[in-house]
Length: 595
Image (cartoon, rainbow, N blue to C red; front, side, top):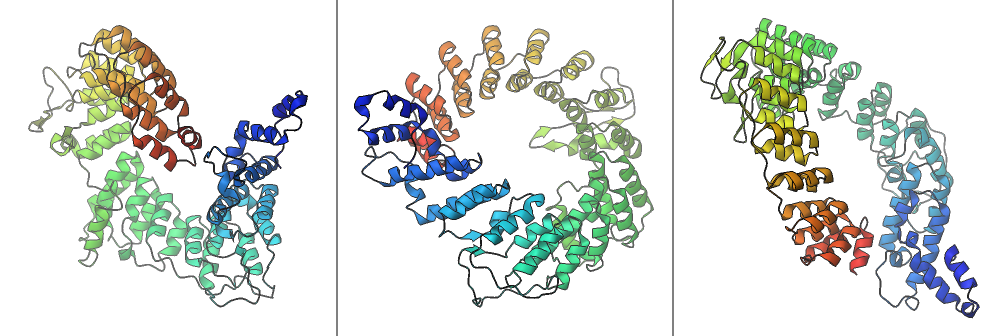
């Protein structure tokens, strides 16, 4: 029997006429106690055995149809009665307990769900490395059907054995990815322990080998291979070693794999600034990776690794190698357009990327090395919108890069037709557009917007104030309103309301006349901004649509759902209840309120 809440207990004690109605006190207590509605896995996060026991005890009332007559839906109905739900909630709860290293809760779960299966690799999936041995020993000690110990050699792994063991264990399933998690944590002691206590189960050693290599543990990978693991067949391990600059692992791997079979390593290493790895790959490839070198310069430049870019440029200039063999060319083409989308030859996109990321030293080097061709705007059309290097620099607030471009003694037209080194009479530097100020305003870079206003003639569009309002940049909105004439549209207040910027919404309401649309309240409701929804209801006439309550229900915002239900006439569609029920694990209160 679940114990009464203290408030309920005190109330019924003060009413002598109710002392004989113990079942009423119990029902009132359960009704008022919202903690028992927590799913068991969520309750485990609070690490309270008392709470778990209270939820468990309250299930007696829910499973007894005679005690609850209102037909309210609750997960507690299934905690003791439905075997599938019991297995699901037990596995999730045990995972939470093991992740937190809380053995007391783990023991409570094992004691109360005796028929449920324990998948050890799932229980270990999120366990920190420092807790792994403690968890393994805990599960082993609570394994009622342990395998018989025998004398074995270190790392004496066997192939999968489908024959029934002498002492079958229907409760705990060992093996699988358990060894993988030990390798990821570099716990050699856990690897030895698993092999010593559970030598006859199947472990996924190939994935464990890859995990060891990804964490730089060559010795552990060698032990796995010596005891039956296959060599990693995918290029992903080599890719990750190059990307992380792990030269020892890369050297070890490429002793077993032909260089021609692994594509993209130079780009991976160069993009992360690992010059030592780039040098080694270049020295040991016989010049066969020059095509990757050409692609890698672009990747290296946009990430700001100037020293690597200079090294690659020198190798490109000195190279006399031919393209790769016809057998490898299809793999190169697939890689260029697939797994590494940043790979490209040096072009205007390289200058745009370096400018966008604020790498002034790289921008200067690219201009001195490749010249004005990198400002050819014909190559910079994306989704029908012209993007320039100056736009990119301004959009991310890199005023120093912007000033450098402005000071260049060149002129380029936006259509890319005229390119020459000459000081124009009216406007200097590479091409620029209204997107420069628009994007700077969107990111709140007031100093960039002010500089563009004073030094450039392109101006901006209504997108500037719209985006600034959407981002909550009130000072930017005020400056644009006072200094520029473009103004804004209803998208300004819509965006500010959607993103929860009440002060911006109020300022726009008081200072501009474009107003908003139903998107304002719809967006505020969708993102849980109850205060803005209330303000819009009281101060604006646009209202909302059924999207407001639908999206609030989908988000689990019960307060907004109730507010809209009480104060608005738009209502909702069947989508609202469907979303609440579908997400009942997270939005249980919304589903119950609708029920």
